[in-house]
Image 1 (tube, rainbow, N blue to C red):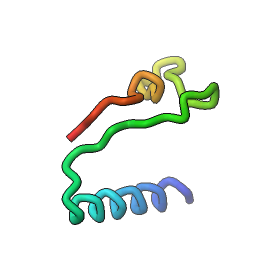
Image 2 (cartoon, rainbow, N blue to C red):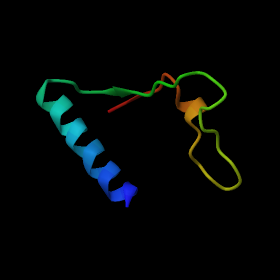
Image 3 (tube, rainbow, N blue to C red):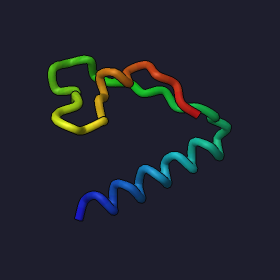
Length: 55
């Protein structure tokens, strides 16, 4: 199962960055034709999130 592992790895990485003093996250993409876009009823569109800063 890749999803539970990925979720745990991402959570650990975020905590490590917080411990180092980082306070925000900026979405960055490769800006190529492989970047995921929303399809159907999906709300996940990485192209639209490129450069967006989140807390």
